[in-house]
Length: 291
Image (cartoon, rainbow, N blue to C red; front, side, top):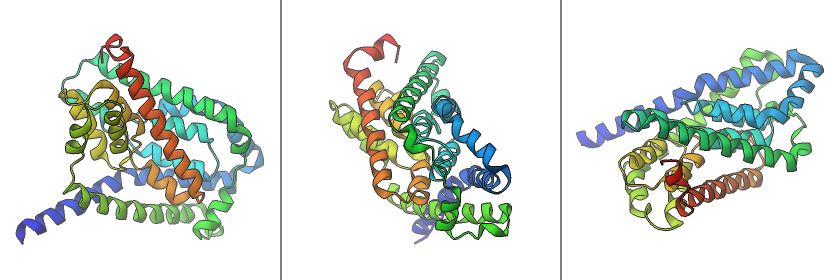
């Protein structure tokens, strides 16, 4: 009984901490969106939209920062069409979450860490620019007001209150998901799953990428740790770390009402991650880059 209670407390605390990490990013995101809608005026809105061509490069660079909050922020911005789909893809592919901390803690050479970051940056930028080149015209229409109406946030009551309303709704949603994930991960450890299939051709990269999709810091920790200890190949590690974007997918599915679009985005993210992983494992590229 006491052991079960201890596990329950552990799950709740871990879920709460994981959720609290992204709250500041969510609030600043919605505050910025509210200011754009209510204060900035049409000229600034056009300027933000026009900056979308450089979005993938900026998004990929910011995604490299060792946190997962920016992916959640980017998902919110995309739901309001403040950033393009290519920018969102670049952020998700570049997001490093807990990777850097784990690699440093495991004593990996600095060259290896920077190589992984470079691969994530370049992949994010190339894919982002490619997506925007195809879909850029469809990404330019801002609908922050429509997002507010869908959330029922009563935006006319002020930008601060509206931003807080959005933040609380998304925070509750993420907390619920984290609680469920925490309970599941008590019985199915991502380390065991990834290690079981990590050495199988293609399937290993696919499983690692699926583990990376888990919207929880445990995924990036598991993948980075298993690679550092020689369990995962370089390609499987890259596949898992490219697909992992922290709570970004949770926020995307919660704020963007186009379910088919969200599912297609997730599928493309998964396919790209697996493809890059296979490229490194089966062409000798990993050895050339000392991974």
